[in-house]
Structures are given as structure tokens and as C-alpha cells.
Length: 187
Image (cartoon, rainbow, N blue to C red):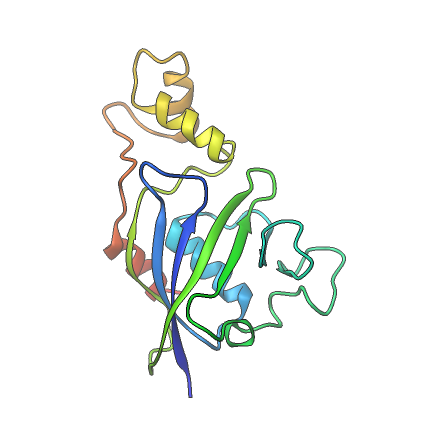
């Protein structure tokens, strides 16, 4: 019988506003599939390596991208299912995406239900996902200062780099649940 796990996933070190998503995910999904779900829910483009670990980078126990070297019995994310790790509500795991920018996401296992749905979905969320390759949390803070302030020294460069057109406003609170649900449904 397939169970559905409810997770809250929040990017660490970003506040004002926090960037988070609440997802329902079948327990038989591999960690690699879970990675792809997280990528879609946050709007990341899945161009970097990743890992899941209890204490973040440097943890002894890691489930990582299948291309991560050296491969051990513990780290190939295609081999482990969510139900292999999560057992009790409140358990936490750190998902790190992009070892350069080091986007760390706190995953909290919130609930489990019996569900016949075989797809993941998003039930809530908040905050705009930072642009990839903006320099991690420090770079994102700089991005937020420059992107909507015409007198900021990096205003033009920031907008050009991020593809924001004239008249467009970057909304740090932007989160479109319906769009996220559609994307996840298509996976």
C-alpha cells in the first residue's frame, strides 16, 4: 500500500520572507525522484549536483546525485526510497542543491496518510525562489537590494543578468501554487 508523506521544505538562511513549499509525495519515490520534485516545486532548473544528509554538507551519511563520486552503497539517490529513511513525524533532513551556491533546504517530515494518488503535489508555499547562480544566500540578499532599485549601482546589470524586463518588478513574496501544482502534475 502506498502512503503519502507530507513535507515542509524551506531554504535555510533566507528570511524576509522565508522561501518554502509544502509537498505531498508518495513514499515509494526514490530520493532522486524527490530531488526532481523539489526542483520543480521551487522552480530550480536541475543543473547542479545535490545531496540529502542529516546535518548538511559534511555529514557521514549521505544520499546523493547518482553522478557523485565516489559512489558507495549509501549514496546513490536512485537506490533509496523515501520510506527507507522517513519513519516518524518531525524527522528532518537537509537537502543541498548546487555545491557552489550551497542552497540548503530543511526538509521536515510532517505527516503520513494512506493515499491512492501516485503523483506528488504542492499544497502550500511562500516566497520567491532565488535565481540560480546568484551567489547563494548572500548573493540573493544583494540581488534583492539591486533588482528593483533604479539608483542601486548594480540595478541594470542585475536586471539584465536575471532577464527581468523594463517595467517588470521582482516580488520576493511571489509564489504561484496553481502553476506549481500544474508543473508537478505533468511530471
